[in-house]
Every structure is written in C-alpha cells, then in structure tokens.
Length: 176
Image (cartoon, rainbow, N blue to C red; front, side, top):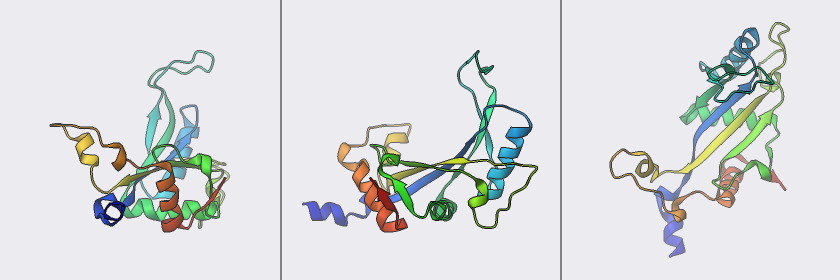
C-alpha cells in the first residue's frame, strides 16, 4: 500500500510560491528604496505591507506602511529560489522548516545576487525569503467556496518530506 502512495502523481511535491519581504519599519524614502531593490532583484513590482496593530512606543499606527513584498509563482519562483539558495551556498538550517513543510531564510544584502552592484543612493537592504511547499492535488478542496473541506493529515506536507524534496530538487544541504 505504501508503494501506491509513492507512485500517485497527485502526491508529488512542488513549490507553490516564494514570498520575498523587506521590513523597513517606516514609510517614506527608505520604503521607496526597498521597493526599488525588490523590483531589481525579482523583476516584479512590489506591494507595500501595512501595519495591523498600534505600537505607541515606536510611533506605529494601524494602516501605516512598514515594508514591501513580492510573491513569485511558477517558473519565476523556481529561478529566484535557485539564485537565493546559491547565495547561501545551498545550505539551510533545519530550524528553517516548520511543521507544515514551509521554509524561510534570510539574505543579508541584495548585492550578493549576480549582476547587482552597490548603489550608494539605495544603501544596504537584506530580505526574508519564504517558500511554500504543497502537493499537486487537494489544495482546491480547502479553498473552494462550495463544499469546503479540510485536507486529510496524510495528504498534508510534513517537515521531513519537505526537507527531502529540497535536498533532491534543489541540492540543498540541511544543517542540523
């Protein structure tokens, strides 16, 4: 029975999306520069992220822009992920994976990417990269409007499966 599960094409894993985020902490010129960096690195237009809570000590209000992000899917996600992993020399810590098989890691400077040069007007910006790994089939059941159901536990991606997927497809070395 276990071999039937392994041969089922709907159980194959894939990278659903890659989210790239730069948290600036304030609106204004610094945020515009961060958006420019994201657009240079990913090749897509970025979106501002807004504050959802109030923090009087830091002067943050609800709806105040604090950062920017880009979501990549398909081939763009695959190409960017390969570039980002090459910067980290294809090494990721085991704690970067969560229970659902998603992975997150950081890049300290945008100039680490190939073809990017330091611009004194922009400065130095690091970014967070989040990768969502899913199975090919079954996600629609969870998101559709009619007859919405939970995905069974056996169909959800586990942490160990995601680690093996990243090792086999992207040649990632997972450091314990």
